[in-house]
Length: 604
Ligand code: OXD
Ligand code: MN
Image (cartoon, rainbow, N blue to C red; front, side, top):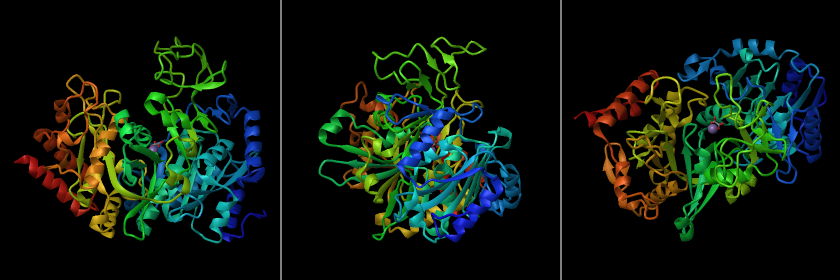
């Protein structure tokens, strides 16, 4: 076939190999033009793949439903395929690349018969930017095309920027029969390649996101001297000061998108504080010419969880979904031709739950609908999503718009820890910060199956996203600290918004009030306040966190979540050592020593 959109022989031969394998009826190249997107959108609406929503209230917005068996990322079927099993590393499914290619090729063979192949050239990061990278994804799904258009930069300008370079990720996606038994999400880091089959759900098939921007990119970053992290990026402007940028990593269900789009409390707004979102999920971070670390958000949109989002919990996220967004597996209100999900109405007592909807599976739904066991049925799937252009976000950072990498002043780690871990503390050094990131995790709650109160460790929130061995990843973090001069290293903090009292209620109000903790970090970064040295790190003096206008929140309450309990931390240190022991002989000595030292401090 003629590929007249490029002269790059490697691109051409790889595309030809894909066509020969999957055997499409037709090939469509996504050139980025509005006319083509319009044509594809019209086709998807005509075929029923997409529902066009109310043009007045949700202009340009579409609704899509997946198969009920295809609603989330599937860690059990996600593989890192590299030659040596020891390079894939301990937290992951590994498969030999030759074996996996054979299995995948058998699934892919002729799988596009009767279908169209769409070729998507996309850039992670602004096209041609200093930290950006390019991928190609072939897919049989218009849903993938239309979502990739929002989540990444797509079009001929990307192909032009690639020129004759071989530095592109080769991505193959085939929906096949959406058969969960034959579903595979495979990364081949040594080949710069991704293959996902038998799924059509976002996290598995929008390959720019987790597959490329975390799994493949983390491996590239290790080899090329940069970092790909599962981190939001936000900028905070204090009156009379430059904007300070922070990157933060949290396991899922810890409010990452909410922190990225935080609205400061009224009293802070009145003083002139402003918060800007650069990214809500992924940060690519590279040393700049001045020796500091600089970050970009490689994505171009948000792929956020819909249920629970309302104008009180996250006004900025909700506003981002008001035009040109794609909703997946939310409920549909046929009367208004709008979307709905659980808790959407919670911000406003006047707003009521609709009394009739079509649920995410396409069935009639009323507030009284129950399942076979008599349990209430949710109208939207709990993992239903919105794909929304970042430019829609009311607090999007000017730096996101220009694509300029932002200097990173702080890394924040955190998890959901009802006990033990204080509201905030600061690492004593870069290496101590790496230790703190390596041990983060969330305690299991009664909502999950299994024992309650067990810490599921999720180092740097990367557990499902490492592209290589976790111990080598820790070593890479330690090495990055050696590249950056100490006075230019970002400060490292740990936060825990989730401490509970003896009745199980959250002590800290969270949401916008998290600004008060970020403010303490800003003061630490600028050397405005000192701190209390403890065996785990530096804790705030209670008077340095401004709680003056939080309703019903006393300094004693604050003190209760700024404690380091000896017995709890002894248990924690023992748990860390057990966790480290599972990670094998490559674990960096520095981190093992820190675990020993922590235990020793609490064993006296
Ligand atoms: C996500 C995730 O969807 O981390 O961002 O699962
Ligand atoms: Mn994520």
